[in-house]
Image 1 (tube, rainbow, N blue to C red):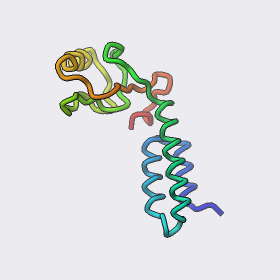
Image 2: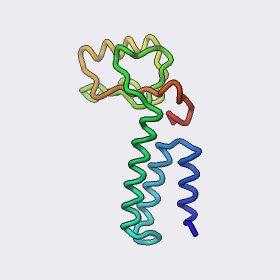
Image 3: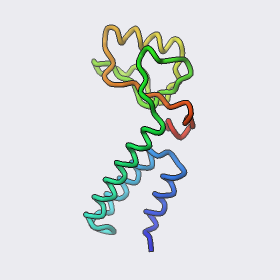
Image 4: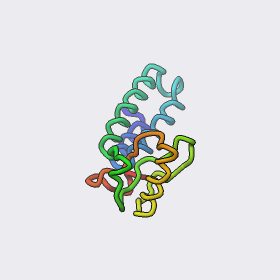
Length: 129
């Protein structure tokens, strides 16, 4: 018989926001280590959740350069400048004004990492929550 928590987690992974669910699942499984699950099983499950997280990120996100930004794109991750300033938060819908602001700031204070936007073909509310 499968554990109820495992069944709930699997159902949410299949039907909900994968990133939130995987974080929730990892937290719940970690809490049960040594009590309901052996530490070895928990370690295996956490590795599996990491693999799923990598796959779901690739499904919902794409790397976009500053010059490729366009109005109505949705940020899959927050954008930070090199100095640590939050330029735009995850889930923001880009406008011409916000794109011009990002480009202007990036000239003086480069963006820390890649810019990730939600892939248009996978755009759903769940992809950015």
